[in-house]
Length: 196
Image (cartoon, rainbow, N blue to C red; front, side, top):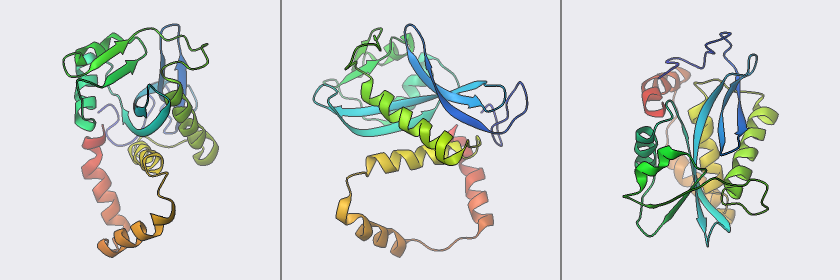
């Protein structure tokens, strides 16, 4: 883990950062940017869609510490079920080719000028998450980022609860118990390696 306690910029030592979109000629990626010197950290976004990318279903968001094919494969296999008949659309990054044996990979350069490109929904969702960080939370620390990503996943994946939301909250409250601030900090500290 690059920052064992919390985000700390290598250049300026700042502890606050924002989620940013980086658009290149061959790919678009997302990462953490230091709020003062603008150094960035990447995020892996995995979106499940229906009917040839026409409608988003579920999302997974993970921090990326190293940008290699093996690390992509481990992160994706850990949080997703890979089926041979499913298609993985990527932005031309060669690291995703390590998944060719488990899933069909469409790893081609994407023209982001096209109206309905393959990663359109992922770009929209990540843009909304970025707006939450910069507009609502005004930046978050490295320690808060895994929790924030998990919250955004939960909100997106449970957006159609509708009338059952109160029943689910009631069920969760009946199973839960109060804990102190010290216990929350302890849980965050011991779970930090799982989020890196």
